[in-house]
Image 1 (tube, rainbow, N blue to C red):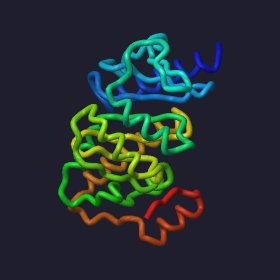
Image 2: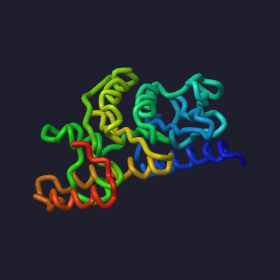
Image 3: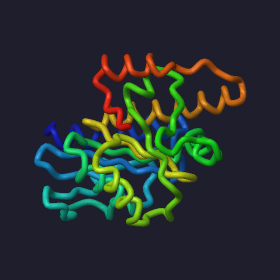
Length: 216
């Protein structure tokens, strides 16, 4: 099996795993990954994470031209913005995960640091998550908002919509976006309970030890 064929299978396997566990439902969510030749494989528009077909993934060449497969997700501007601004991005995942969306609707969330410091893993895998305002689905302005961050964030949260995470490869991106959803769930479960959060010193130690991108 070729490297691209393995990547196609991996994309569909990870997407189905997230769908089966309720991290995104119906035909929501989209996923993309760099191919060995510098192109992209992207989930097609209107498809379900539970039923992606490896042979029908949208295939772009290194110049950004669709060369085979079904038409891509309408959220391509989001994916393109991450690839263009983060040279280390090997994959991008966008979900409509319930707890992170719920947290994005609350009035006292910090837009520059969306997730509270509840566990080390949210910090290690995501750094600071930027909360972006609401955009209509498919609006190219979402991509421009990501470009405006100039590659300083690996993850953003689209208010009332869902998270978007870039990773060095498709497995890393999926692991990170699941950590985002888990941390949002913890934030909601402990809301109003005065939970013990990690201190600034503890966060700083994590950032230094694990070389976390921690944009101020």
